[in-house]
Image (tube, rainbow over all chains, first blue to last red; front, side, top):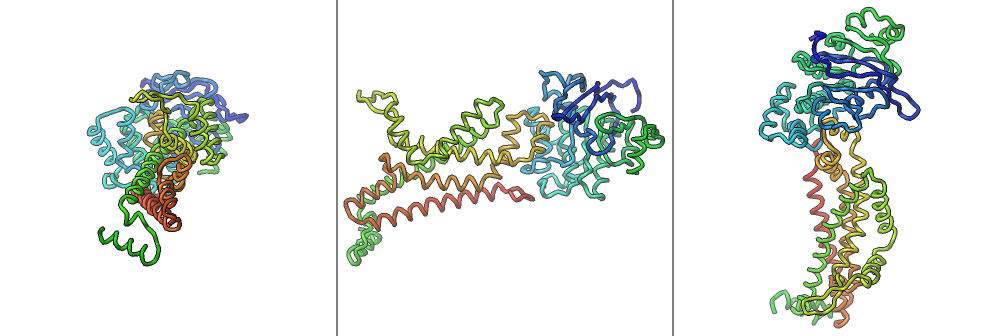
Length: 248
Length: 248
């Protein structure tokens, strides 16, 4: 998993992004190789979520370049569909489509967007729901599911597009403590299957356990990064020490 | 005369209550024509005004500003002027400058008759309100839900068709019902340009029979039945579309 000869799937070079006068990302560079699990941690407002949104072009960047699986994200003629079928994203607030059942939520995008065969998609969707342990909830509507269940459906929905990279934006932040684990379990399985994962998270124990590399960001810059054992065990920068001191 | 007709004739004979349409089959057929025309106006204008509403709301989300201005001006014009004045504007104003066509008998006739003008005027009148109603529904769909659709590769149009519109429709059903009820009642002003709808026909009958109170009661009861049936149908549709776990 950690082998440095795997090809780079996500590459950021000196990415900058401002909202009005406020510069939220001030020159971020990072590489994520195939099969790697990368966690981004840091205080609120340090630009973590914006960074993920930049990577899948939900937010356009001002400067620098982003490359995802050979697609230049900052290209003005970007084919958004080509990008988004390669990179899945799971959100803090689940964002399931409330008017469709769990199974339909998983099936919708491959049918509507990729125009795949319905029967084949349904088979895959059922398998994905089984993978996140929600087979018996296939016909339930999002409003009838708990937060943890909704989030697992959201993961399955994203996986149905067969992405090469998955991004998780504080996916456990809105959950109560008991249900956090069921979602983390699903992500862990995914990582073990070799999926490239980029996570923004406040679950330090989980980041420490699952990540190949942890990035600490503060005020729009990467303060330091390294393997979790080093970053958590022996942080170099005072800002990192301060943050970890408060949170651990 | 059948029993029904005999009863109303007796009512007239004994108490002077002249519900002539219920015992005289010629007048009955005349009223039936009026009722049919009213129902035609109702059905056609409801359908067309909903189409106008959906199309207008979609155009309002356009990135092309002049298109948004056109829709905005349309709404302002039709919302802020009386429907009867609009009806006159179309029939007498536009109707007089429209090109005339030659019919099968070789005679010149107007391109649109009064029935067509009534449909155009009523559709545009109710459509303007429908645009605003659908727009409010679209704006009430959470931005995060739309973002999730984008992240799954949905184009703007596909997200609108499969996610945004179905949710917006549910949100705006109460407002839509209200406006369409208003439209059903406003069809009676087609009377002013000589469309033989219920009120017009009633007037023709009472002008001969001098039974104004009876005919007016009949007209009001007719509208009461039409509108309450429509409201019942709309609430059935609203209930059927209800999403489990949500209030809308």
